[in-house]
Image (cartoon, rainbow, N blue to C red; front, side, top):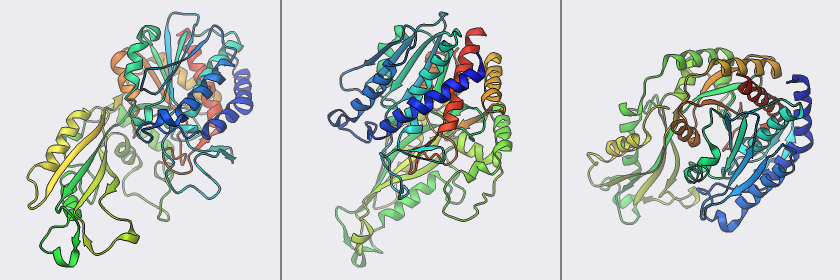
Length: 468
C-alpha cells in the first residue's frame, strides 16, 4: 500500500463525502430504544439506517452486498459483505443509534444541528458512532483503489448499542453462517487518549444500573409536623449508599466488585499515563479552576478502567426547586450506575449490591434495589505479534508517533459477546472519542483530521492482516 496515495484518497473521501454525510446523519434524532421506546413509530431509526444504506450502495467496492436485516420488533442491522482474496474473515463493527440530547450545549451548538469549527464536527452521534460505517468502507476501498488484497470483510452496524445491545444477539444468531469465524475484529467505537497517535483499547469495564427506593410514608406530610418522628427518606438513602461506597474516597466497599489487575495492564497504564500526563484529567470540563487530583496519573487511569465506581445518575420523589415546599417526602428513588472491572461477573455484582442494600433494613422504612441492566466488561486476549507490529507501522506512518494502549472506562457489550464466541480472534478496538469530545454529554464533537488518519490506519492493518 502506498501510504501517500492512501492518505490523499482517504482525505478526499472525508472532505467530499463523509463529513457532509455525517452532518446529515447528525440531524436525525435516532435515539436508542432505551431513550425512545416508540422508536419504531417515530421512524428516526429507520431514517438513519436508510441513510447509511444509501451511501454504502454508492461505493464502488468489488462484489459488495449491502442489506438492512430486520427482525420484527427489533432495531434493524446494516449488514455488509465484501468478498476478499482469502477465506479469512475480518469483522468491522459500529452502531448508528444515539444517546439523548442532554443539556448544557453551548449557545451556538445544538445536538441535532451539525456545526464545523476548528476542525471539529459538532453534534450528537457523529463521533459516537456515526463515522464507523463510512470509515470502515473507506478503509477497504482505499486498498481496492490500489489493487491491494484483503481478507473477506463483514461489516455489522447495529441500532441498539446505547441501550446495551439487547437486540444484537438475535442478529448474530440469525447471521452466524454469513459472518463465519472472524480472526480479526475491528471496532470503531472506543476512546483515544489524544489526537496525535493510534490508540488501541485493551479492556472495557462492565456496567450495572438499577434503582434504589426508600419509602417512609404513603403521602407527603408537613415537615414541621413529622420531622423528628418520621425518618427522612433521603437520609436513609444516604445511609444505605454508605454501605457500598466510601463517601470520602469513592472506593466501592463490596469486595466482590473488585478484581485483580493483570501485570500487563498495569504496565500499559503506566506507559499511557507517562504519555498523557495532565491530559488524564484535564480533558474533562471541570467546574473548579486548576484542578489537581491527589493521585498519580497512572492511578487515575486505573481508577477509570480497572476499579469499580458508583455514580448517581437520576432521581425521583423530589420536586423541582420552585415546587419544593416544607414537606417531608414520602419516598426517594435514586438511579445507581456502577462501572465494574473488566473481569467481574455483572450478574454476581448485581446480587451482591442488592444484598448489601436490602439486608438489615433501617427501622421504619421500606427498601428495595432493582437491577435493570447488568453488562459484562471485556479484557482483550494477548495481542498477536503481527497486529502489534502493524499498529506501530500504521501509527508511525499516518500520525508520526507510535501506537499506544489503554483501558476504557465505558462498556461496549458487543465486544464481550464476540470474545466469548470467537476466543481466538484478535481485536483492534479504537475510535475518535478523545479529550473533550464528550460523547453522551453536551458539545459532542468528531475530530475530523483524526478520523482521516484513523481510517488510513485501519486500511494498513487490513493489509497486514492479509499478509501476516
